Image 1 (cartoon, rainbow, N blue to C red):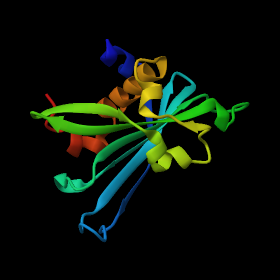
Image 2 (image 1 turned 30 degrees about the horizontal axis):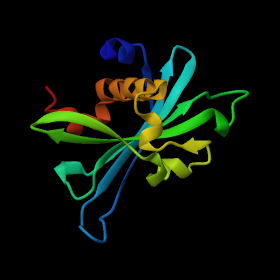
Image 3 (image 1 turned 30 degrees about the vertical axis):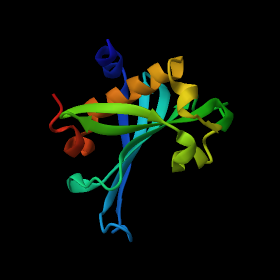
Image 4 (image 1 turned 180 degrees about the vertical axis):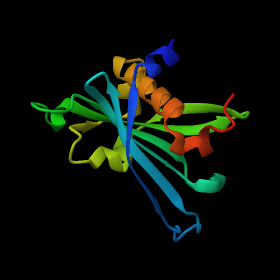
Length: 150
């Protein structure tokens, strides 16, 4: 039922940036970002970061800021959650990782960065995976990542 939930979410793409080359490996990096909305309410901000062309020295990450946005909200209403994307046996897989180790965890709009253990088997995990599904299905800018997905 995750796909149904993801389709109830709408994306607002707001930016993208390429940078590099990395001083250690010479690879370029790309980041795209935006917001995910459920009706009139903002569900999350998202950032997807990867190496164009399939470079593997740096990972592919989906960093999320989940919580309440808009009038009357503050950073304490939002948490950072991070997932690492990889392919195992040609199939796409996501693994929750510590957001405390990602730049999103230090954002001025985040109240707290969550560790992996704080996300697993919780309602925030379900929200995070629904947001990632929506981004995966709707953000054409990450087509390079999703192109071979079954």
